[in-house]
Length: 602
Image (cartoon, rainbow, N blue to C red):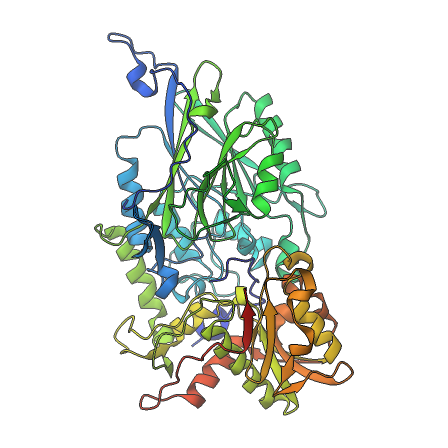
């Protein structure tokens, strides 16, 4: 999975087919002297009045993306640093295990609240995506999620569908999936403080929510990244305006303070990139926030000190860091990777005298959602119910592979496979098609050789293909000059993609060198760009296949929005299915591509 913003579905496949606690984590505790009377132990014998300080447990996670079942391959593992400096990987994720871990963590904690940082749904595997993510909302209800911010993927089907997920009701086109049973919607509030209706100028959902327990009050403000329209298709955000994250949070922190709520947590669907991929990396060493970069750093530095902690997401990274607020005081900033592989346990010490969090005592740690604990039976029942409904579609074989086809790397084997599939499909539409480009964020998972169910090793099912490409983008053909094509490659590492390059996956025949020791556009070695061994001619015209998201200029590839001679084909998963069926069989499976088209210099 790419740790970058991801595209939206242009449309859903549902209509088309339904018609037929382990691990020791980094503790970013802020060390300071605290009065000993924390929690209800602060009561004196014979007195019923609580003590001054009350510890509040904040459990959080982010970027679940409808992964109810344990994610496959590397998407279902986390890296853990060992005391001797080595690292190991741990299988993680799956809501049957997440539920058990959260329930165990809450034991003995009367003051516990569970929050999320957005992208609970969208880009989901078949078990959820086929049913407009109703299964995931049901699972989150059972997890006792209290509140979440929206993420960019919450807008995959537009604001109206997001409203249905919040309020309930059967889908306007596909109706109710369980006969006689109406979808009841989310038991928890979605917060969208910086997402405004262009006509009313008001947030489309609640901007904040206040958790209360025995006199303790903690406010939650939820925002998504301001650049959501730049990383999604226009259809998903039509009629909406996305405001600055910092300005929005600061505005509502003041409003909460006027209401007497001085303890505030910001839920922000924007994130950072720690220097290590290990979930227990100490990003506060040698100094607060030194080991983390990315958009969340500037955001955290500018959010008012009235906010006591930040729960973040979007980058699918894991961290529990402190970043100084505008007054120079350290403040906790956390993210629990993605797909339900981790959860964060943060202790907020509430001062009943002031109504605020004693910030110097905030401690936080990420914990692995191991698969060694008992499964939560209610989640097993939920998964079984929805898998039974999805089985007639999901179990259909669409291809055969001889080994794992990974989604890891600057150029990944699965990226090559998808680009090749789109090139082959493009040639069916127009024999003059020269090459294909695929955005890394549109590739959500690897293809694994080991059988997931009863299909047998090496068999690729429709459900597995859907998990890889769940967006239902169409495959589009456009004409570009050679100069424009080189410019597209430069846009991978410049503009909005300068800080976090988005390296397009390319079809066979296209080769070039990416020199990451250089800066800006120079990282793409222009004279190295070749097609079938011949240098790209700046004046020549090339026929290029992309998905509809890229064809609209998504992910900062503005030049791809300037093509001519547009031709729109079928959806991208259909192209992959056709390619696998044409190029593999049970006796002659397709081998993982070598991922050797881009020469990367580091």
